[in-house]
Amino acid sequence: PKTNHQVPRHMFVGPDSRAGRTARTGAGPGQGAEQSRGRTRKGRDVLRARSAGRCRCRPYVPVKGDHVIGIVTAKAGDVFRLDVGGSEPASLSYLAFEGATKRNRPNVQVGDLIYGQFVVANKDMEPEMVCIDSSGKSSGMGIIGQDGFLFKVSLGLIRKLLAPKCEIIQELSQLYPFELVIGMNGRIWVKAKTIQQTLIIVNILEACEYMTAEQRKQALAKLSGN
Image (cartoon, rainbow, N blue to C red):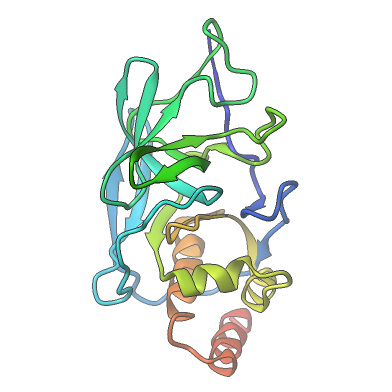
């Protein structure tokens, strides 16, 4: 049998948030997000942002211990291949999920988004990921929920968002409920109740690359006033 190993819903997931942090936000109109709808597996779409002209992002270099968002590109025997934004794909064993066995395999399909951690990352070996910690628990890692919006930002912004008591996250939490997964490879996955609300959050997060804190507060104030 196959089982689902999905990241818990309505949780903020980052490298230092094993239990997750609840992320809640509010309502208002979005402003012209560029988007494309990428087909993944049957019955499921993932919205992917176009980062051209917005994020000057270098190819990601895997680092042992980094938590990242990967896209399953192939199955090769007992191993999945994941695009992590680097020069080569990463490998992920089907046994690298909580509770997975030869008889109880995770239900992973090509096109799925995976939040996991690097256990092998050096120039002489293929990057290897797992979705369990040292005690065999998922700790928030696994298959990311269906739908949502996947986009890329700079590592500088990623570090800001993962900082304790991040003001950006706290301010967004005043708008409306949303789910957020952040990877150290510059990828962010977000999902709110509606596509419009999701795109608003995407626009705000992308704008944080160049907006000052005061400009951000003013923009959020306008949104919350609608």
